[in-house]
Amino acid sequence: MSNSIKTLFRDSLKSADTEETIDIYFTRPIGLVFALLWNKLGVHPNAITILSIFLGIGAGYMFYFSDLTHNLMGVVLLMLANFCDSTDGQMARLTGKKTLVGRVLDGFSGDVWFFCIYFALCLRLQSSLIPYTNVKWGFWIWALAAVSGLLCHSPQSSLADYYRQIHLLFLKGKKGSELDTYAQQRGIYEALPKHGEWFKRLFYYNYANYCKSQEKRTPRFQSFFDKIHATFGDAESIPETLRDEFLQGSRPLMKYTNMLSFNLRAIVLYITCLANCPWVYFLFELTVLSAIYIYMHKQHEDLCQRCSNLINK
Image (cartoon, rainbow, N blue to C red; front, side, top):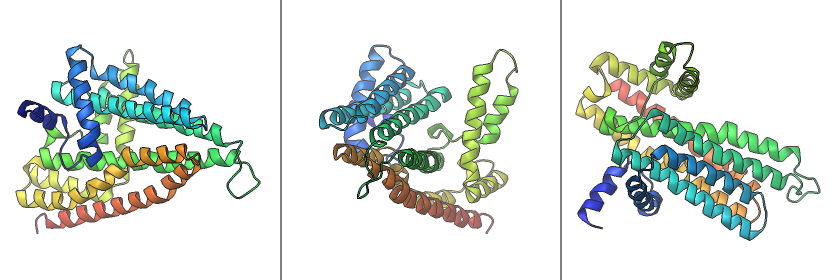
């Protein structure tokens, strides 16, 4: 890899701290090649995100079937969707075409993928027998998927993203982070005219509530962050010793944020679908990923308490 390509690759990443090994050596290099190609063709990152949505829907359709061929096609389509998801972010960072709408559309795309996949898996399993019984899954697979998706997957992903953005703020400052607050986004919403801007109002209303849900689950970080603003003005003005203390504690938690994002979840999905036991995937969400979520949340809140105690000590 030439020095210029190495530089482009480094600039296309959020940070070494927040990238997974699989992404650094597999997903991101492929994403960079596509980013350079599509940028040359004048394709906007948001168009690539929309393409990923259709690929994810296609993956969901393929996972409806139980045969190996369709499931392999589902794996390929979901991998392509993920390459597109990587590409649009890398392209936005390289070209400066980063927008809040693009970021939320990026997050929305992943929700569409997994909604379609969960829906397809429920249709696939509902007429099948629950293992070691003579009872069909029926209603219970829909209940299992709903709990897995709404009460596990969704909060796991949103908090993982929140912790990454917090880490990036302390590591790279405001320019390197996409950390937003409920108050800020709600203020934008309320400043919009009540007539003629219905799409923007809907967008900022929902995004503000998304930020609020993250903040409600992180009381010690909110207290720490408020203390930073009251004492130093903002996170970029804190003493290096405090910054280093926070990053030292936050860095080991980044591997857990990555586990709760895409790759681990996708690998388990691929294996269970190919082995024709996708119900195991839902149980994995409920048990293993939930345990990781609880541990990550506790460690981060404890870190924020320790760092908060250091201010004015």
